[in-house]
Image 1: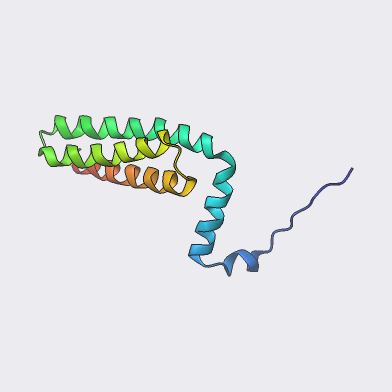
Image 2 (image 1 turned 30 degrees about the vertical axis):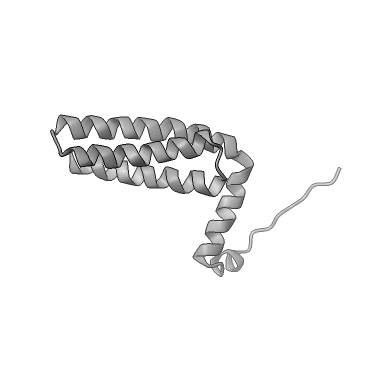
Length: 107
């Protein structure tokens, strides 16, 4: 019975640039692409709904709701269309960031 052992070299990982680490992370996410899609739909939709609630509760301008809705819908469209992993991840993070900012502004 053969096993594969992978050693971790601290100097190897610290010498990678930020872009190289990001690309490696995206490559690792490709294994669980459909899991990422399901979590992005679930968490992105909940954050968009919470953001919309705070915007309307605070009687904020309509453009705040439109911005939150736009980024939430972009996330959902990328997930439902089964876009590449890089697109899904980037739009998910962008949606979380925008909706979190809207929530913090309207608390």
